[in-house]
Length: 339
Image (tube, rainbow, N blue to C red; front, side):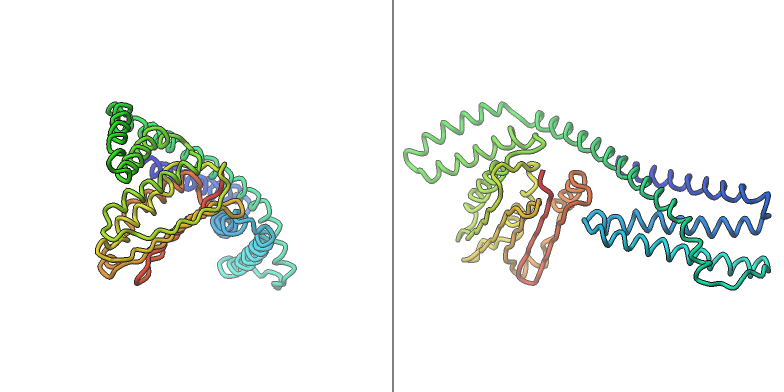
């Protein structure tokens, strides 16, 4: 809700700025050029300014500059300025001739290129505008994250019923069970570790990647109990053990595997998971087969939607999230920058 209000306020601010620009240009020209000529000049120039500003901040900047393609960004900016300047000059000449019946000099490329330098200042202003948008967006996202964190901590406090009592009780049960059934005792230990993760680690901003991986592995071992024939899980890990990541960021994919990608009656449930580090990014990929009934009923669900929203708040647009659902397989891929 707060993000929606922020976006609405930003849109209103832009509308007010453009109205101010229109009025400023029109009334500054009106005493010298008259009503019609001032109106035409205002419309043509304001349109060209909008093309340069929004072409840069909405297309060129995110597509090229933010992805490190600086050479392509420079080339496309020059092309944008030149093409917009030529179009602005040609449109001005045509409109003047049509509405004002003014005979202008023959149109040539040199004359049209004379309109290009005026767009350079507008391009610089578009950069300032883009930086301002990024600043206020980041500020809003930070406030939203802090609010959600505070709410999560409050909910966690409300849901905790003497956690240390529960841990101590589980430990006592573990030692009792271990004497007669070591396998079951190991599962109790994993459950205790999962509960401890929720209480001690999940409220933090970041956790060691080893802690996150241990939590995922404990979860998978407990889930395998419910599968009649078990599951064959291949988990590839190749990363710096000193890395730290936000907690519960990878769990959505693993949880979806056991919710939607496991056929309990099937003798084989091959699951492939990889967590690797490459070129300053952390790559996480899961793959599992789907039965015909699961393919037709499996939704992306609120888990993926919530994860996407959280990724946007944490990384802006600097992440990749891909969901690939084929006839007999389901693949999820996440790429996030390293902290």
